[in-house]
Image (cartoon, rainbow, N blue to C red):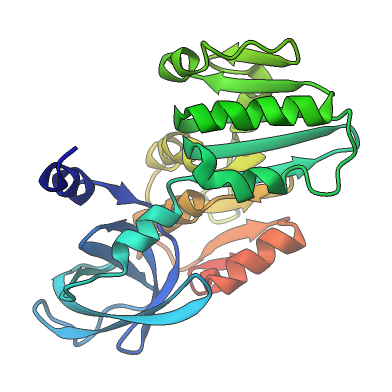
Amino acid sequence: MSNSAATNRRSKERAFCGLPMEFDGHLGNALDINEHALFLVLGDPAKNIEAGRKGVLTFELNGQKVTEAVKVARVTAAGLSLVSVQEASHFPLLINQSHSGLKYVHHTERETIAHFRGDFSANIWLDFCRIQEGKASGRLYRLDFTNVVHVAPSGVAMLLLLEAENDGGIVLCNCNKVIMKELSKLRAPGIDITFFQDRVADSDHQFAVSVEEDSSGQELVTVRIARMFDYNCRNGFADIYRSRPKNALFVLDFQDTYHVGKAAFGTLLLLNQYVRGQNRKPIRIVNSNPIIRQKLLDMKFDRYFSIE
């Protein structure tokens, strides 16, 4: 691919970022980002900010505080569209962070469940090694490839190495036709490949919804959040709140949830934007475990939601 073609392709890429950021003293979270611009959702209305204003955006990248010179392209009730004015922007690095690697890993007594994304190749070797750290041989590894877009020969070699060292079996779930073709040379009796959707993995992305009226007659919608609340849930979650009146009261029950991905934070912000200004009561988040609760607090979500 030529450099110009690569640039054109990259310029169209977008990612749900969800990172907390600050623009000239205004705190917010990046909802949508591409190579040149992002949308910053603000906790408070963007008072005295007009299109064309230049300022500094501050955020963390790889654990370091960085700044980006930006210009306000558009002001809405939810926040600001900001365009980078730097010749070498940090935005592509934020996109790259969300593309490839280990998305989530969960260990039980006998099984390890790992979700990967992007290119499955030697570039994610360190992430791949993480799933085996401190684990004895004989485990079953269930690797979810829902968000994997390419398996390189080095990725196949990584799977064969895991199978040889572990001697417990590997199940590759949710492989699409492209991935199946790339894995066609994989011939190992200890590796089982599941075509399309794995029913166990599917159940991790399901929501339960109940609707009733509160004491004032207002519609109260309780959403039991999926166990894996991530990029794969974005459409299902949006369908839930878009089918309800904008003045409905929402309760998000996280009692079953053990993972919240970056994209999920973006969908939560979209829900907040959907009901913003329709009622005085904030959206309630209940029954989240300590790790998820701390993530919500770290990203300043207590400015948008009532976290109980």
